[in-house]
Length: 116
Length: 109
Image (cartoon, rainbow over all chains, first blue to last red; front, top):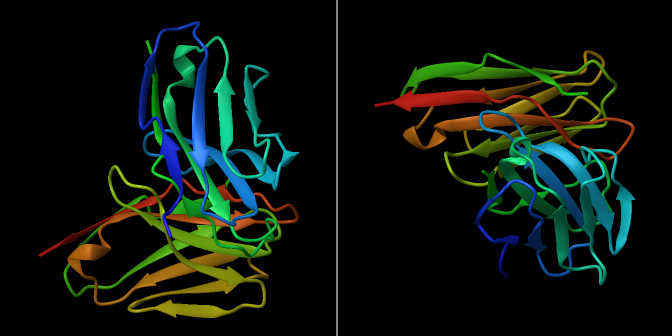
């Protein structure tokens, strides 16, 4: 009955390093979403999975960002060669169904990424 | 495309009412409302589907005018626990949830 969990909760990395952010959705949830939230702003869509299939990655800022969900459950968002502008809160959300337009999304606590 | 929320911030005394507006430039299928407290994840309040429905959640209710592509969130007889940032999220022809910049609500005793 746990909610969406994310790890690590905080990550400080040096510019140029790669980071991997993990999301564990609510058990049985089909859809998984990644968002980025800047301070004082709403979450910004990055990418979306339906089971293991990445349905849309149009929100990923550039090719340094990638995501996978190989077994249709846990997902990893990877940022290669991090830059200071990548610093933000990265949030994951999941929903029960296949991402229908009227479906509630459950948000995780987020990973605060700081690139120094 | 990101919906526009207004006002950006509102300060209330306990028991007062407030309205938060959300408007979009695209045709909408649904509007989602979330509340986020400082340092926490956004918490779901309600979803409104096209059809002009109105929903309630305790003393928090919302309406959705599909033709005007607008939604309003009504905080009635506000309580201290209502403080936080309220986000509207809109969904159009795709499934993507686009969030507004948020409205910060502060309720004072």
